[in-house]
Image (cartoon, rainbow, N blue to C red; front, side):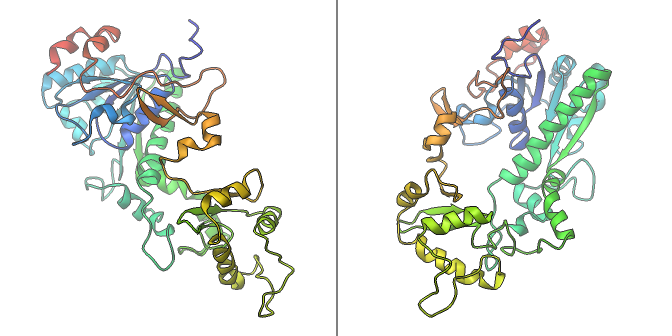
Length: 384
């Protein structure tokens, strides 16, 4: 059967998500954006207290059933769903799914082809496996947090984007899709242990290579890509905004100086030569020159000046401003769905594009439809 062109590359794939918060739901959302039929099992009560489920965008492109997993009958309903799923995603502490009767062995007894994805911070084993934790702790232990921020200040917490979502959700999504490829080829399911500490550490592969080559110092603001160089940093404008500056290549750097009306052949009033960008000893003076120059105009004025050039300078936008930028608007990087502006599905596919088909799932709202579509009539009996 040919898939509709707008169904997404994962059309026909069934994903069962046991409700949690953070990286598990985001990974399931990603699969849903790519066309998978994602059914989320919500427990009584909201997973995100004080947040209206209708605004939780990580639950878009999903359907929801509500089951109390502490009830043995509800656990059996989950196994009924798992029997019909291709992928299961859970984010409990190690051992909890087993105690609830929905662990890998229970599910594989019903569905040997199932890909069982486990999302945790510390992993399924190791000395910290049973400890509570959050993104900031995971990125701290892997060395990532210590690499971000100013040298004379505290490490800068990168929201929960690097740990939960980059080191967690994306690695889980890649893992379960790779395992699904294996399962469809061999009929053999397996468990995917996606730990945020593993994925986040993996993200630092290049930095470890640079350290081994002597090209990266293990401290903040001392390297090419961490704000250590004055030509890869951000600068304040006269109106309190900022411009991001990153002309690493010499020809792009020359364009930056030209547009800033700085002549590297001219001497300073005190007779000193213009700072040499390739001499770290000159970086403090070069940073001072750039700081002074960017402070002379507003962010909008600098944005207009650098527009259409290869100087690698762009404005630092807020989350609210980003969807309005002409480039992102032209690419429809953000879209409006169900009255809410939000990031569009990514990446893009020429033949089977991802789509926004459903607004965030309301807990338990789709039990009847899922029972019919997944042919689990007893699901209605287990709904609170």
